[in-house]
Each structure stands twice: as C-alpha cells, then as structure tokens.
Image (cartoon, rainbow, N blue to C red; front, side, top):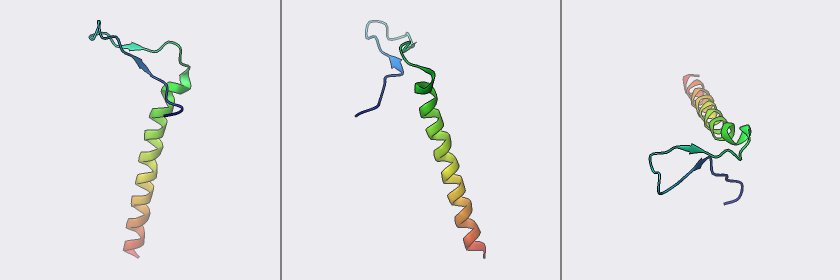
Length: 56
C-alpha cells in the first residue's frame, strides 16, 4: 500500500518495548486519529439526518 508509514517500530528481541518511530513528523500521528474522528462525525450526521427524515 502506498502512503502508509509505520508509527510503531517493532523489535522481536525486545517485545515488551513500545517504540514510536522518531523519523515521523506530527501529522503522521494525527492523521489516523483525525480520520476516525471525521468518520464518527459523518456517521453521526448521517444517522441524525435519516432519523429526521423518518419523523416527518
């Protein structure tokens, strides 16, 4: 896939360590969170829009 950067680096010899990729900029971390927020907002707006049309 194009455009996917690893946010977390894995190390099989140290499985208990959680290392964040230091080579990434801030927008690489914000983008997945923002996509989830926008998806939730869109789903909520569509649900409210459909409920409103059923009431009338």
